[in-house]
Image (cartoon, rainbow, N blue to C red):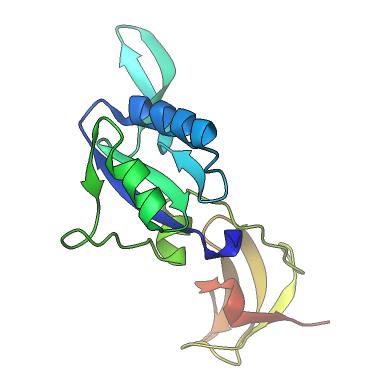
Length: 173
């Protein structure tokens, strides 16, 4: 059942994001809706603010006015969220909430993908797809967040760095 859950975006009054999150979490617990509404998040980022001579790291809302909810869309879950104080509605055309795609969820950092790779910097790899298919190169850098790898390939007698997706390479033994 939980695999049917998708992430939806809720629009809130500006400044009410945390209050909506708290109220929703209380309602979910009080009504026993943990099976329908699995997670409520206000995406935050750390930024460095400069005040005078002092720098300090503060948490800032990534998307002011929005709250992310992982839920199974039913009349009950829709009703609970729609009738939470501070919520102005779901993001989507008309009254139909549209779930985020998996790509959107990962690019926004709402959920982390666990990725295991069988290569490391210095590994020899063959490019299997794209403009550099069949080129052989050496892994220079790995970005697990974006699931990309920088490979140094030899092109026209020059070492050239190429950025590729994990799915575009295979490790050579």
